[in-house]
Picture (cartoon, rainbow, N blue to C red):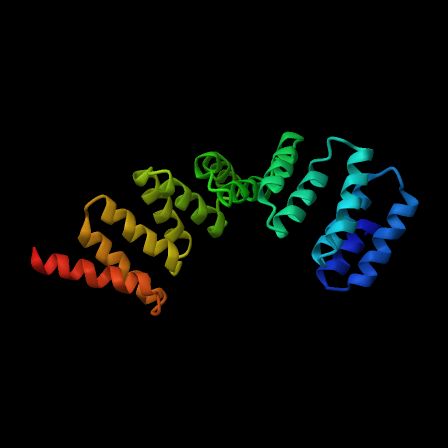
Length: 220
């Protein structure tokens, strides 16, 4: 196990001082390798030392101006501070410099969504979903993005896929019901409102939807 792997192991065990010492040792022994600075930056991000973390990421970029992981770290840093415009810029840099990673595309998409730019976010949610097909949160958010972009048929198929991955995913079940309402299929919508409540009995939106659809069907 090298020093970087050892430092990451300390981080995962929440042994933060040990992680810092290990990454610092790596940097001292490898001052021209951006990896040490990136991992120390990630550690500082983790504890909320954003200014210090930024210095480490910037140092990594000085060493390698095309380090996708360094830009990703900066993206996380700005995202954590709710600076979504700058976060999106850094995540775009990460992708541009070769970080073909589901989390990078996902974080870029969420950063754009948080700027109310759902249309631009959609292809990045799609790419994330392609790279991590079993990640229910990524798949769900892609489904929502399709719905927000009024691609209801595609959204419905995507949300049904999420319910295949997790048949207790209450928000996916609820939004499936909403899609069926948009498609004017109230009986199917009612089925999924009920499934939502089975998964999460206190889901108020589903409860309200169920009552309204039952009233509509009884009048018909």
